[in-house]
Amino acid sequence: MTAQELETFIAAQFPGGNAFSQVEEVGDDWVRLRLPFSDAYLRPGGTVSGPTLMTLADTAAYVLILAMLGPVALAVTTNLNINFMRRPTPDAMIAKARMLKLGRQLAVVEVMIEAAATGWLVAQSTATYSLPPRGAAQT
Image (tube, rainbow, N blue to C red; front, side):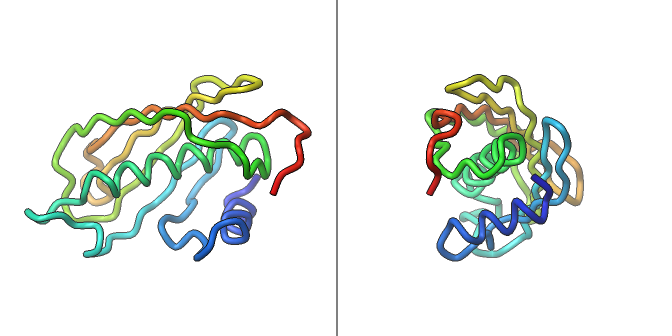
């Protein structure tokens, strides 16, 4: 799926659409998302919150699976690990997701999250998704 097709699918499947992040680029086994900065994402101390970064990592993993398999709405997160590497400054965040393993039942995705202004790595995540049987009805 292209970046535009991904944005359209997500907007149709999720209430409120995809106001959280924007799909910037799609490759064969990777995607790049941008999370525009918002004061709503800050925690005390002026840093982007951990739950915001976790949501971005999970979103990037899901978008990559969609990009590779097509509109598989019923793919679900079964595990998400995240390592916070550096204090994220109040800035837009860039998530770069790449497929580590795409099997029949599971997909494993690594996501690197950087601060847009500095390029500093702020978090690294690994997400595992359960995939519905191929050809199963999607809603």
